[in-house]
Amino acid sequence: MPELPEVETVKRGLQLALAGDAIVAVEVLRDASIAFPDVDAFIAALPGHKFGQVLRRGKYLLIELDRGAGLACHLRMSGRLIVREASESGARVSKPARAAKAATKAATTATKLAKTAKTIRAPQFLRVRIMLASGRELHFEDMRVFGRLWFKPKGKTFEDVIPSLVQLGVEPLESLTSAHLSTAFKGKNQAVKTALLDQHILAGVGNIYADESLFLSGIHPTIAAGKVTDEQLNKLVENVQLVLSRAIESGGSTLRDYTDSSGVNGNYQNLAWVYGREGEPCRQCSSLIERIKLNGRSSHFCIQCQPLKRKISKPIRKPKK
Ligand SMILES: [Zn+2]
Image (cartoon, rainbow, N blue to C red; front, top):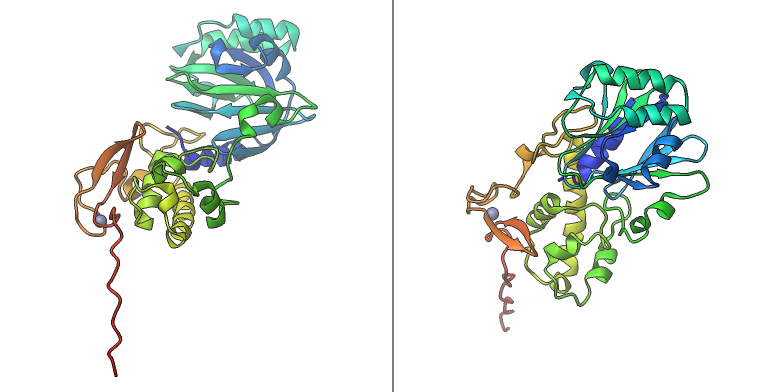
C-alpha cells in the first residue's frame, strides 16, 4: 500500500511531468473510481484546464488546476497515477464511448482523441485516462479498485469536496512535535503502534514506517501509548521524520509492486530495519526479528532492542563518609 513517502514521490514526479500541460479529454473506464462529482460531470469539467501546483496532504494528492479548480486522488491499496507516453498506452480500450460523449459536450478535439483511443492499447487496470495537450496521457491505474479521484470546482476548497481531509492529523514532516504526541497519547491504553497509525493523530504514517520508527526509538509496539515516556516520544518524533525522509530520498518503498509517477520502482525495502524481516537477524543486535498481529496489522520488532519492560539501572549508593 502506498504510504506517505510513496505519495510524496508520486507528487514530486507529477509536479515535474505535468508542469505546463493541460487536459484535453477524459475517459472513465470504471465509474466507481470517481468519488466526486458524478462521472458525467467529472468528464465534462476537466477538459480545458491547465495544471498548477501538485500538493500532498497525508496520503491525498491535491493537484491545483487553473481558474480555481482542482483534481484530487487517493491511491488507497494499489492505485497509481502515471504519466504515460501515448505510444506506451498498453490493452485495447473497451469503452471509448465515454470519451466520445465528453467530446460532444466539451470540445471537437476530443472526438479525434476518442478515435485514436480505439487503436492504442491501454494498460491492464486502467480506470481513468486523461488525455493531455502534449499528446501524453495521465493514467489512473488501480488493481484493487479502492482508489478514488475527485474534481474540485471553482469556489470550493479540497476540504469541501473531501470532508475526511478536515479530520486529518498533523503532517509528520512539517508540524509534528513531541508535545503533539504527548497530548494525543495521554491516558491511552491503545498500543503505541496502533496510535501511530491513527490518521487523526498523524497524517500518512502507515504500517511500514510505524514499525521502522518504533524500532529506531527502542519502543515495543504493544506498549500502551499513554505509557510512552517523554524521552521516548522525543526519539519517536525524530525517528518518524528520519525514516520518512530517508524513504522519500530513496524514492519510496518497493514493498508490494509500488512505482512512482513514471513507473519506476523505489528502493526502501533494502534499507528496512525490521519491516518484512521476520526470522532474520536484527541489524543492530542479531536477535531474530519477530512478527505479531496488532489490531489486524503485521508488526515487526526486535525484542532485545525494543524491550517490553524498561531496564532500570539500580541507583548507585553514595559511599558513606
Ligand atoms: Zn535488535
